[in-house]
Image (cartoon, rainbow, N blue to C red; front, side):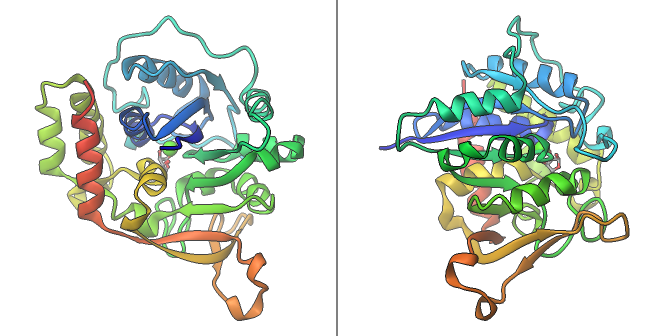
Length: 314
Ligand code: RIB
Ligand code: CA
């Protein structure tokens, strides 16, 4: 079986941490070349520390490079109410002695991509604000033909979680999203239309918390924090948004996908960070409709595959 080469750009982050666990459980099908970090759920120092500790805990020997500490233009906006002061639901992890790469994430991404064997490409999986990816494609356009596609968690065809129409990753750095959307690289938007349905119930979280398996228990404890300390407590379920791009890569059949052209509102008004999906195929040439958006998800199938993966980790 050909393994899909991927690079995850993240801001761990409870759901980022669970996504990394899912990647660890699927290392036979996903070749994780590198992890890069970006300020988002928490400050860059915290999310980078978390990424290093998580990869060590998961037994993944993957390089980590630290990226942007703030959005391209706007002020940082952290989410301790969802992810805790330490970014991992205030769950403690053994501290690894590993350190990040000496290069900044953008330079490291360029190095990794240009080092790929001729004809090979990697899939970028941004699951935080897209600041690093925007800088990469703007500063080093030569890497574009080494990128198969960008499968990202962010945005929504309809809905929002920071405002009624804007999702956190896009809202934090809409200019970065615009630069990525205009890069010409094929995009798959794993937005709230699907990720809100990719959730775990309180019962499933409780069972994970009671697991004797250390990684399953950690994921349960982190998800439990998010479940009890955010709007999830009213929904009674916690969405594992960042696992969705990886579930899509391995199990596309559990999602409904639609072709579109993506854009984003970079105003400062009420619609800041709103992603716009142009579905008007009759107005555009076939090749213009190069993007896809996940419009729906099979919740039960998502839960089965994620939970099976987490319990499979020792
Ligand atoms: O809106 C959900 C996204 O924002 C996820 O990536 C979560 O980790 C936060 O970064
Ligand atoms: Ca994230």
